Image (cartoon, rainbow, N blue to C red; front, side, top):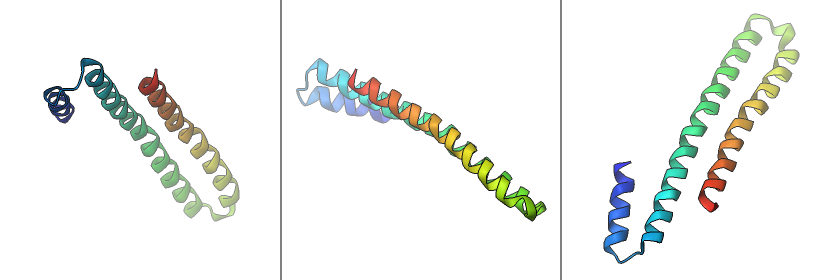
Length: 94
């Protein structure tokens, strides 16, 4: 957050208007928010893969069903990241 404050100060010192400074701050905040929104799905997908690999190693005969369920779980988890991206776009351009 300190970096964003420095960027805002440099922009203000360079003669940027208050509206430009506000837009820069909003874009930085929205990007930071999307970064936080992407952490959860990343951890979730890692847990899904780890559990699926462990399950397939324990019972190889059920690998087909586990793989199908794994891909469904990944799709639902990735939807959270896409929702975060849409919110990021809405905050930036609203």
